Amino acid sequence: MNHLNSICVFCGSSDSVHTDYLLAARQMGEIFAERKIRLIYGGGKTGLMGAIADGVIEGGGEAVGVIIPSMNTPGLAKNDITCLEVEPSMHARKARMHELADGFIALPGGYGTLDELFETLTWKQIGEHGKPVGLLDVRSYFQPMLKMIEHAQKEGFIFSEHREGLLCNADPAALLEAMGSHNHLEDAVRRWMRQE
Image 1 (cartoon, helix red, strand yellow):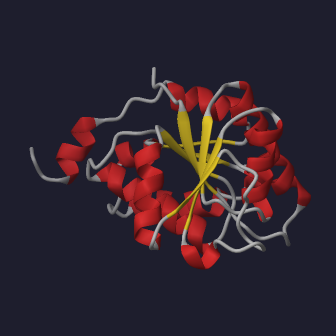
Image 2: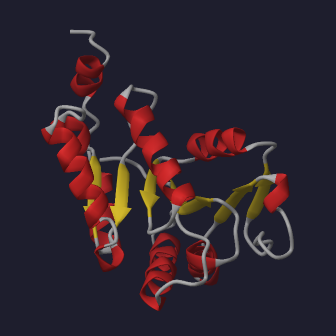
Image 3: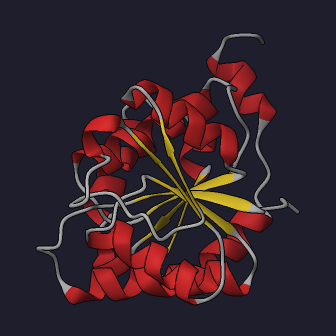
């Protein structure tokens, strides 16, 4: 069983999205607070970022934001959270978020969310970490992406073990349960790195 004291969440910052996405993010935050899971996230106050942080803070939980100077503005940064850290670059920001987290969840989002998700999966694939990675599949948002991943697997670019390492559920509680019992497969890392 994985001890998930802190989970890093990648998610969109756009306000111009269906309310289902915002409600799901807030619900995820409420569940984090209930379960005493610390939220590690990008530090924003808009879109799903703001919604999940609101859910955590209003539920009495902890939220740690990690942001870069250009985004640390009154219009973008959420200052009523437990802690807001400012890192000098996007690379440093992502490294710090990884350092603080016991696992990772992607909620719906755009380029930034997908970049963070795939970097996390790539690092897991090469053995940089063995932490669980999940998708909260609100409104079946990630289904087209999962079809592309399955195509890449079928064509030989992704091993089945690595595909199985990406957990997916539309229910936040069920996703957290799956992440808590997920086993990182060291054999998959060795095979990918050609150590056997």
